[in-house]
Structures are given as C-alpha cells and as structure tokens.
Image (cartoon, rainbow, N blue to C red; front, top):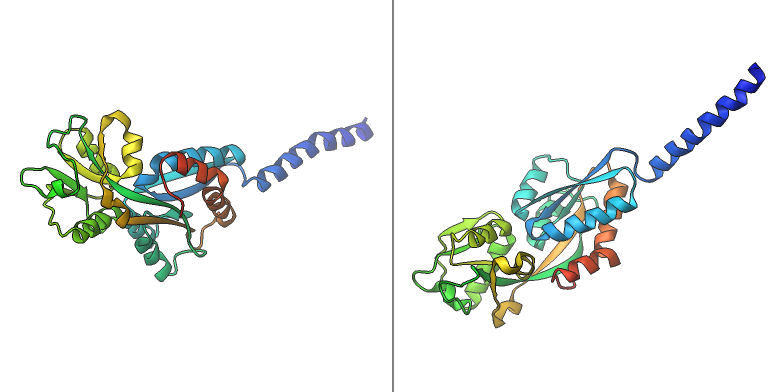
Length: 253
C-alpha cells in the first residue's frame, strides 16, 4: 500500500504546484497595483483598470484620483504608488527632477478646455470672454492644478482678468460645483463635459486650441511591482487604452 500512496500523493501535489507557477507569471495572487492619476482620467482609467485586471489573474488595480499637483506631493512624501499619470508635463517634471520615476515618462493623451454651465445656463455664458463679466459666479481649478494653469494661460492669451468665487484642487471638484448649482460656470476639460452628459451644458470657444494639455505617464521609482507597472503603462499607450481614451474625447499625444 505504501508504494501506491507515494505516486498518488505526487499526483495530488503537482497540479497545485503548477497553479502556483501560473499565479507567479500573472503577477501573483492578491497583488495590488497602485495607480495615481489626474482626476480628469477617472472614467477612462476605471475602464482601463477593468481590462487590465481581466488580463491579469490575481491582480487588483487600486486607483487614486486627484489634482496632479496633490498627487505629486503625496508621492514625494512617500505614498506607495506604482504608476503616476499627470494631466500636464509640469507636474510630471517634478517627479523626474526628484528622481522619483522608474523610467522616462510617455505621453499618452491630450486635452483642451471647455466651459461647463448648469443645463439652463443662467448667466448666458457664450464665450470664454463672458467669464470675466461682473456678476458671474465662476469656479476654476487652483493655479497649481493643470486645469487651473491652463485656464490662467488662456485668460492671459485673451487679455482677460478672471475673478473666480472659488479655486478647486481638482477638475472634478469644479464640475461638482457646477452640477450642484453653486456656480454659473466652471472651466474644465472637454472630456469632463462629455462624461457629465445632461448634467451640464458645454460651451465651446474657438480659442481652446491655443492651450493644449499633454498627459504623461510613468512608473514610480522603487515600485515593488515594476513589471506590472510597465505592463499597465503599455496598455494605456497601446490600442486598448487609446481606444478608451479616444472614445472619451481625449486627443492623441
């Protein structure tokens, strides 16, 4: 009987050993890939994360969204991010200069500004110039946030002085002020207006092409999941990611 038990035990053990090998190739069980991304990427990166998880058994993508400048600060202070995607090159450059990227950043999308108003457009906003009129409750991103920097650049190009009633830390916060009726208008991105649907009225303006934000992505230095981070980035810059981003209104890098 003992001679029969040995091969039987081996037969039971080998399939489990094989399963353990497969988990290692796929990133291992219970592996978490932490991705820090600009708030304007919320809906698109949620879809990309779903695609990535479907292709990597045992891997969970943890997404953290916010203003690019806030995310940079968190990474500089030691937050355990594996990937960082910025809404502009200026904030990515801060990580590069601090030697906090694990590889050269890759540009993966572009975006332009659009004005969002409540559906009934109570202030009658029809142009970017209208944002400077007296009595308009305008909300913008703070200057250190990419959408805020772009808004200020646009105002400078048009020789306007804006008087916002509030400066927010992310573009989603600006949109929330508009959708809640707390503002007559907010300066966001084209993609944010598209994602909001009927909750807002989008006001385009011909000068928007003068200020284009380029989005870079890079692995964070000393990531414990460097290989997975690279694979995620390749999905973003590859066909899958570009299709999702294009459908949301992002431009090509």
